[in-house]
Length: 492
Image (tube, rainbow, N blue to C red; front, side, top):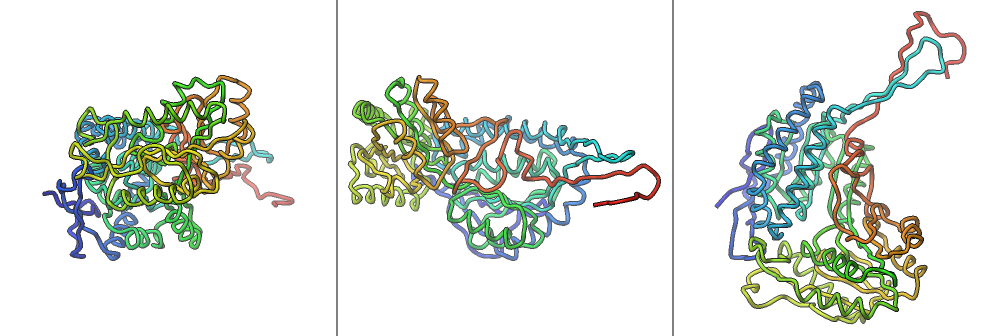
């Protein structure tokens, strides 16, 4: 059985806490993958100190040289793609095809950021004064804290680590307790690629201790967080108290809007994949279907039929469509929300219970669930469930559809299904989400395109793509006076 440890100043560090938790396969709770040692607050401080001490040397390494190391990490991830995918499926529960897709996404992001090392450009700006030269340069913050979740434990660390390191920062990353194996393997590969000791440090521990400690540490000059809105807002407050940049990607309650003229085959399949794929454990998952009343009966009938066809099981089986909830806590949370939906008066049409048969009793499996006759005031229409649960909200026309779709504190992703160009562009203009799709699922994204949301979903600059380095750099403005004499008049 493997023991997972924190990585501090280039060494795997045996914690003195005496605390450890098992790493359990959620598809089979009898399969104990390993044990994760939980580090202490003092050990978290040591990680920050190591990153602080390593900063000057890494900052002074030319950006293209840093990029070469990150590019090497991408190649190593490519070489170990299947290994990473198998680890991910076993400890998080994704199907093997979903895991391979996530790992490839991570590789693409790391490759992209490596290329950005040669494009850390500023700009030259004409001065209003004669014989003066003005320009901008990008500089790293220093030590950056990264707090990452369990639902994408390869891709999300990748899209935080790679730009942070390329920009010249040093890193302390607090990984999710549920997915230590992927975090450890990622750090092994980045270290093998040549990231120097102290430049990247990994902490395995509780967010209430380790996460809080690094967020409050005076040497930490920026924080990037992905997780729940509740925790993200606390992290944001911690950073705000010290006046440092904070980036948070938090919850989602993503709607699809199904209009009368849509291709119903496309709408149903896209909604089903968005709602039930990855067990609904994606921040971009489809959780609300806002459907015009005239086509709602057909949509509901067909989405139920599609939901019943998904095969649940261990993600390592290529025939499996949907894996388990990540752990017992999340499993119970989803079941609790299903009970809340019933109590609030929503009409449960399919699913709504723990899956049984075919050995599913040994894992945290929940049947794909569809509620109809949901209204915007119900909790299942407003709160993030993070499970395979879809709420159908019926509306009379396009204007009501937009009102209902936007009646939510979150604003991450959305979709519209229509063949009417006018409605398509009206939707794009009026929908309150950071990302939107036309005739495709709410899920998905590309490595070279920005990712993130608005409202209670997002704080700070977008992640990934052309904006990926924005959060991890400071802009310095430089004025060079080459007149050779003192300036006369108003200097304002």
